[in-house]
Image (tube, rainbow, N blue to C red; front, side, top):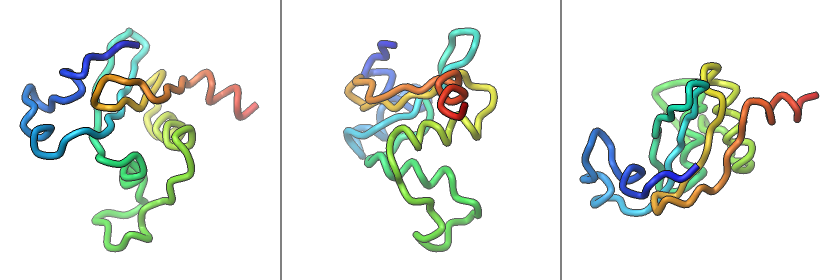
Length: 110
């Protein structure tokens, strides 16, 4: 799916955070009715793993699960958010890095 870089660079309607932090990555959540939600931003892909800590506040870096792969990251989002049908990782320049659907998750688990 094509998502504009302008959309990916905005949070709450403005791009002030992008002007401060610059290029990075965004997680997009897709729903059955066809709409999508642009989620978290991270400067580095492995930083998204903070969303999967078992305890908050994060007291130590060892609380953050280890980054394995983009596929693993997307699978974690699909497993934790039952109402989404797909999830994707985009660069803030509009490039889709990878997308994973719930159907792919079921197929890979047998």
